[in-house]
Length: 255
Image (cartoon, rainbow, N blue to C red):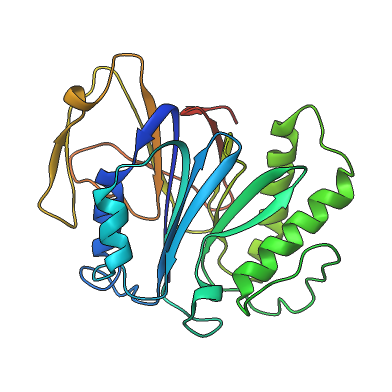
């Protein structure tokens, strides 16, 4: 299966440390060789880098890792393809516009009997079960909320309910964000950790890298990282339960 990585922070933060660990799982310490992608939010806009090549050897991944883009919301994905061929249009994360905001989505798992997910407004570009599921979620949200509601948290709670419905069709671990809220939905395997003062050191599992967060942060920083599997071996990651949804805003758990 694929692996997910997400971040929610209260100040623009670079994700280079966690991203370095994830990249190694894309063909080196893990079998996820069928492409990778990452989306960073900056204000109302976002920038996405994708490559259907293995992340461990991708020149584009090396560029992103060496260029510390700071963001408050990030979603990343490494792919082990099971639905759809290995190509750029099937590479996560996927992004669509909703109410003038870029919505980004990435999925880990595999669905069956998903052809009945009918969509009107949003259509897949590629041919994965993941992108079709994303389009279906957005269609359902747009049908329930024809106009942007003042309470966006309610939209993300509804997205979590839709993700739980998709879990009936198979494994559906999901990350979903508008650049402000970050929704993590667990079907069978997802973890998260919130780092805040007093900060300490952390060691990556997949690379010989150690970071002292106290030297890289201020006492007011709050940074939450979400991953399919823990990326460090000396921190206390929270393991989510099947069917559990957690929503973060500016690094803090709000639901």
